[in-house]
Image (cartoon, rainbow over all chains, first blue to last red; front, top):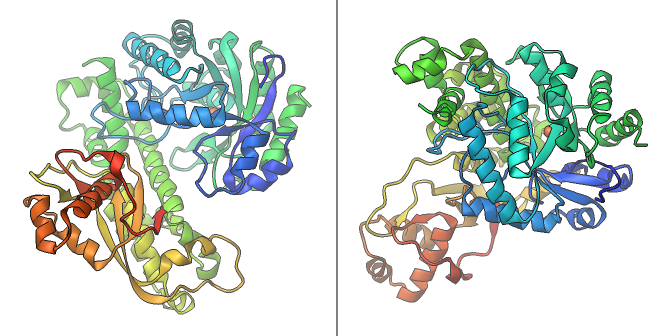
Length: 268
Length: 274
Ligand SMILES: [Fe+2]
């Protein structure tokens, strides 16, 4: 992925490998959420044709990363030749390791947490010899435990660690929705000048949540409009990725979404 | 309590159903935890906790019961539908994500769901119960074990499972995931598998001979390896190599870790990752 051109891609869904290979060109890069299966017959070709981005679970930056986690990330980043590696702005496992929600969940935005993120992100980048992008995660329920805003947390994190921003439009839409904010106003509170990668995704209704949440579905027209609006405001963006990774993802969804995304963002 | 500890309180509320129920009832929290609870929208947190619980088990059912899922059109029931039942809904407040006892309760529900009135299914797929036993063992291996106290000598890990099957399932499993005209039929023959869970959560299944089972059953943690080898009439050198391999798989826990640089090929070759 060069510095001059914006690459458009999707997540590697192994059950759709043939369709992905057939749409090389429309799809330029693939984010890798899981390591390739040992017997995946398509992976050698996938690796040859597409730029690959490490988007696996590396570890949570709230705590020190284990040597095992660093070694695993290094091995995968080298295998993919990933130009940057991604992690989520999340804290999902308790310090004693006893409880793990095993799903993206954001930290409380405090000075103490920020210092932990900065220190561990520096170690991670140094250890991998590759830059980090950090993806923001929405919060479903109110928790008045923050000392600083999410935008300030991210801005200070990027400035101090040298990492940059992976902005997920659907996450932003959900965060604004559940905080009762106007989404464009909320987006302007985030460090948009730091965005390296943009995630485009859909949301769907969940009965347990009595409302919308992250889902491996196509973005609505409204979501793509929002992506197009923010795309005008992220001058350093290098990649746009359709964020959908699931065994239930249907054939046709990735090519259709990338065509719509390219058209709406003027990247046809 | 610092903010990292406050985060842990929230994570436990989300992952631990009984803890959350207690908090929702306003009981049992110490002053520091109560201060965190007071600043959180608890009814919304409870909804998110239920969402996470269903998501957590759905991911695992989809992953570990993939062979039952592939056969769903043939049998008219898919395993993940068990998570939409009233029975699962009633189970949720008592579940702790990752806990082995919780995984066992979900597995019991899955078994009931997949084997209820299953005679017509068994008539079509004679190895249906074997399939459930095989996948269930992997499902259970995924759960985080409680810390096993270290014995003086190498001991069989508590997470090690033996799965006794009436069919040679591993031989046909990959074919179940590809389109087929005639249902793949494994050989009807007794097969014993050993499932081991490594320290990092990787689960390995290998065919387990009577000798290997006897060996593992002898590893109580109270007897020195040389003595076990002598009792079984096995050469001490190859016995130690086997122990090393079993430890690297997680089937055996030992106080002094064996070097992993000696893993050879003494174990049966057929191994499968779930
Ligand atoms: Fe994303």
